[in-house]
Length: 196
Image 1 (cartoon, rainbow, N blue to C red):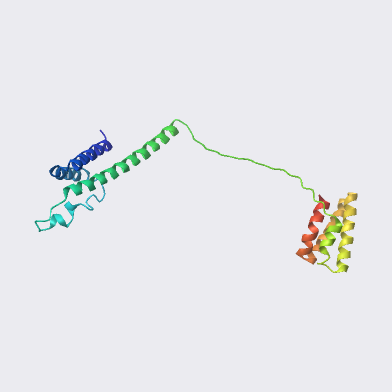
Image 2 (image 1 turned 45 degrees about the horizontal axis):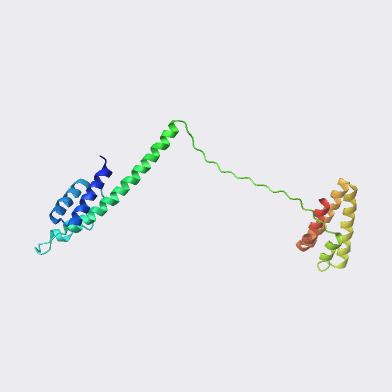
């Protein structure tokens, strides 16, 4: 018989004594529980009349409430039993893991999820749309200059001359960089459409 079973039987005895109000048996059972489990249950004395001022009082009218002490000890025994059960369960789980590792079983959990989406986006921005956005940003001279550069770039790129396209693109990007972020925001979609 294990410790947990011993505690369960002792708890049943406590319940029987409490239900039938066997006060004389309560004192014996309290003494038994304390003598057997005092080293196992931390702070077992806390809250018991037997260890409070009542036991050391010289007043003869005050008596120790053994039935109350038995109820408290019963609760402490139940709590101690739960702790033992948790420890036993943890021990069994650890042994099972060791046993499986000794047999060469390796548990590996790998949850993977792959998702991909492809989309083709065609950006079609005309030179007129781009220049329309820039009317309020650039002065007329710079606007005409940029329009010429973009039109030339478009013609060179359509011919397929990579060297000249690269030079023209570089010139346009320098021009845009000099004019600021608002111009870049307006022109870059058009350039992406050309490079497309």
